[in-house]
Every structure is written in C-alpha cells, then in structure tokens.
Length: 111
View 1 (cartoon, helix red, strand yellow):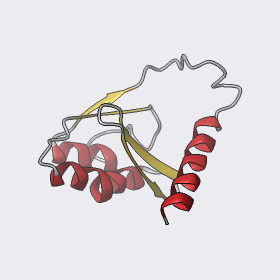
View 2 (view 1 turned 180 degrees about the vertical axis):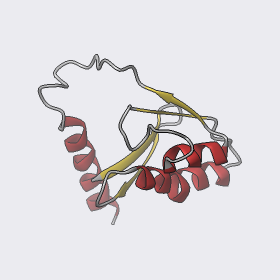
View 3 (view 1 turned 90 degrees about the horizontal axis):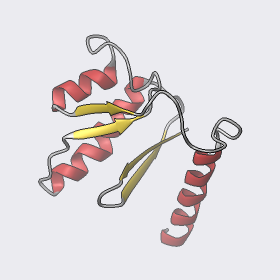
View 4 (view 1 turned 90 degrees about the vertical axis):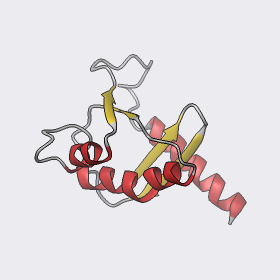
C-alpha cells in the first residue's frame, strides 16, 4: 500500500510504502516525511485535506492520526461524503495505479 502526500499549491509529492492502511501509518507519514519537509523550509503546515477513510477519521482521544494532528496543531478538512469523480465507483483502484506508475517511473529515472 502507498501513502501519498501531495501539496497542490507547490506541486510537491512524497510517497511512502506501508504494509497496512491504519491511523498509525497515516500519522507516521506526516511525522516522517511531511512535517519535516515543511519544517526544513520554515513553513507551517496549517491544514490537511483527506478522504473520510478510517485511517484519517476517528475520535481525537483514541485515534493516532487525529492525536498527531492535535499535537502539531494542524486543522483537518475532509472531502465531501459523496464522491463526484466520474467512474470512480467503477474503478476505485485507478488513482493507486496512476500513483504506482508515477513512482515506478520516478525511481527508474532517478536511481
């Protein structure tokens, strides 16, 4: 499984591979890759947009991702409940396939 982070303003993307899709993994991605990247440029990470997956949403007191956002004082915005992307229900794996192709191409060209 991949855990991508894409900054749509600066067009910076980072990806980390994990073996599960849980809240602790989502928090680790922020802690290991995203927050240090912003800190290195002295840019505060103020808000993050995620889907409504269980790895991102839960009670703040017991949910690792929500706890991490609270500790770092990052506002959490979630996508709308109804997906408006065409054909997304027919092919839910398409974004992951595109991301995997991107990562494979990036690695082969830069390593």
